[in-house]
Length: 326
Image: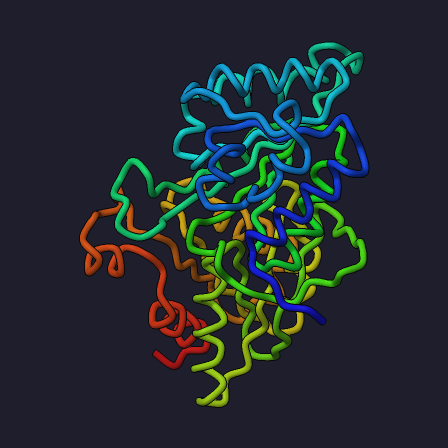
């Protein structure tokens, strides 16, 4: 199977859907003439023209609102935020318009729109450009929230998101755009709301999603050298969450560590912990352990970034704790 970059997988998903459906268009800052801030939309302006690949001013509230209105009138916009940190300017349109229109209109209107772009830490970008918003948007009824970790998942899930009749938040990472992975040339879709077991194991379940799942994989590789078998579950979507896949894994391993690049309060790992304890408490042989970011804005200095974020060493320590080996 061919190997392509994460950004190429996203580009293919958007381009294929735009060829398939003339109602689909891309709009955002630098998506056209500059080929995208991270070159995700490279070449798309040349193929589809300025009516379907649209550069916008630095005005997220404005172009998010245009996208919502276009979706209500039968189009299928893809709205790119250069980073989801900038989506805070547009959050009123995302939450109070896109997420609520179907309910408020009694089903008379749908909003088939995708808001996509990078989330979370991207190196030395400091506090205002390094925040995780997955749990923020996942807290909103009416939205679906996708956070893929591989090029294969990114393409299949983005195509499903574009075809969905409700608003979808699609979150990526600047640090993943150059990641390479196997992606079929033939068309495929991945259903929204289905987790994936990325690594089979017997001793402990590690649940994660997005780019931070690479930390879980590194930890699992080191643990294997010590004879510890870790099963890794990639949620892929955090609204809806595939609880059943997690619970079935915990029933097998009897231990759970949740790894997430987010602040401790009110995050996805808290929700996973609650649901597993509610539905599989009798299968747990140890308390669930979370590995999350420090409860502080992300620093600029690389040494402090490393200290604040989840790391393979922190995951290994958490696993040994639930195995009573610390």
